[in-house]
Length: 49
Image 1 (spheres, helix red, strand yellow):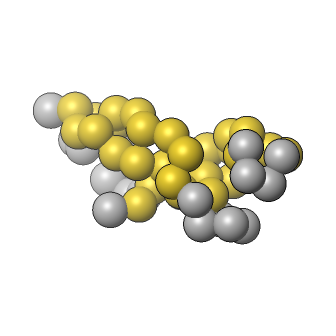
Image 2 (cartoon, one colour):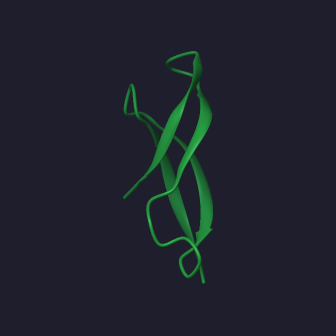
């Protein structure tokens, strides 16, 4: 049920984090606010392919 996904920074487009999500309960793309080492600040990270 759970799939591995990669999180991508919306500002610099770097792929920083990997996490899992349940495809049955979360149908859309996941978006979380995480720390980006490249930007050196907290930015929104979206699910990428």
